[in-house]
Image (cartoon, rainbow, N blue to C red; front, side, top):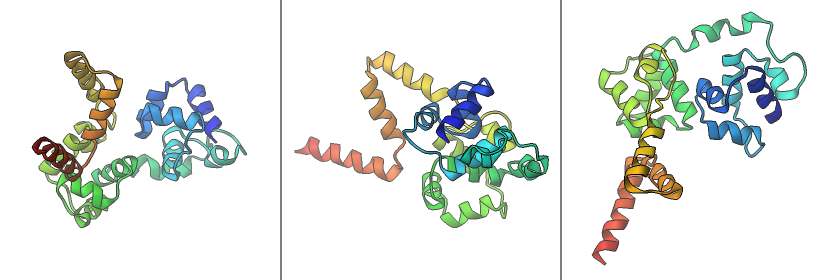
Length: 199
């Protein structure tokens, strides 16, 4: 399957970054999938088939045609992400977070996340902004489905930090790891440093 994913990307003449961006995963993740280092999740397979109109049977087994000719399969897909709730759900799945973990990062309960995803309630403007800030999400995509899911500012920001403070690749990796921790995890790390300082 990994080779077929690479074949799709090459047929579509997309870079790994472009291909990944449209299904909400990173260039590195696409590279690892294509090299066979990791296998795509069921959700990733589903996103690939939806976004690029790929025959899921072909993608999984190599049987049949690459592209799906049955437009009816995708009628629901055309509207699936039309709701804000669906976009929140897609984002959470792409980030591999449970509803509880997602909610903790933006200060709302698991139940609230579930209700948002089911469109049983609309998120407040504050919640939308919290999601965008916490996960580096494009506000226009989250609010109206316009543009790419993720903002491209993080790479530029890390490049600026590296230049300003003469950081090497390992330093940047440590910083990226730290900022992706939850608030609780960051608090624990701070406590460790404070305790070492006191010793």
